[in-house]
Image 1: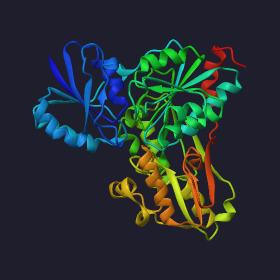
Image 2: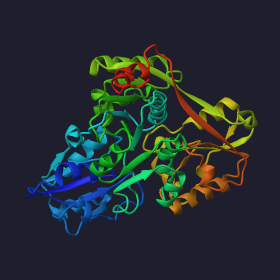
Image 3: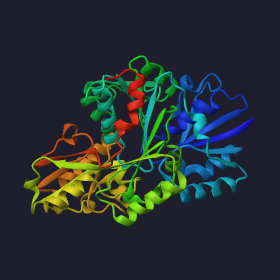
Image 4: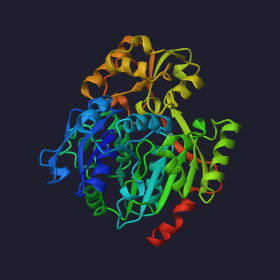
Length: 440
């Protein structure tokens, strides 16, 4: 029997186990590791999901303990199962694993895809923060305007009780509150919910898919980070970010999305340089020449933008985009610059885990990432804002952060939506599917 360790970040790792290892009698998964997300280690993957071969469940350890785990368990294989990491980072892990005479494995991502009885549209990306969320919302609106019912299945974010989160359904803000969703979860679910869409997520995606299929004609897979779909898509759309030109080939598994997609949407074309766009298009021509290419911009709007001129502002951005997404800035930064505001450097005012994030992610200098994976971290975020004492807070998170974090300063909300700029559009791409469904 092969002993296996699965390296993860609380999502793709569990799905890979469920699809590839759970019922494999030749394998014993001795543990998971967890990284990227604070507070998701030191848990146990429950036996109710792991199956009868794991009556005590499967322990989850910090990935920082990988060397000790290799010594303790002496695995035959170590499987890497999380997203938005460079191939350079992967090679570092490979060298560590192979130094202990274990095989280092990247799973066959196509073998981890469930098969749906419904048409599936997948929205994925080459990096976190490329523009998946506005694209997903745009497609949901297209489908609903055509009279087609659609349910969103979101990439997993099971940061709490894994048994309770096996299958999650969100149709109202109250559903999120009852589930004690983190800021990161709400950022992905709430924009869909406010537009009347139902969102599913969870831990065991065979069960998630079964429940979602009962509610709609079409499934929209709303990907996380730059991960590949958990369900085999009929239409696979991958967002390419020209502001990080070349990253479509250097990061895992975004490169797989880039090569597998039948539609590539180049976002932010208005912000990219000519050289950046040329790099992206050259890579498309070389690595996925058969893909339909669409171009678009993320239109950034702000309530009361004029009020920011010459004011000291603290810009609060989407957390994952600016941290492990390597962007370092987002829509709020764009608005603050455009408005002629004086941006506060939040680093001297950061406390606790927020201060640690600045130490880890050196690219963040003039914005505050909206990290909120726990109640304590939300409190630290609030304290950081208070210590900065801004004239205005620029709230550029996908949700209105003011709903979950009490602000004692004036604030403005920044939003961004997809606008296509190319002759070929997403509606053109989806027309054959809509005709097949008899949509108007």
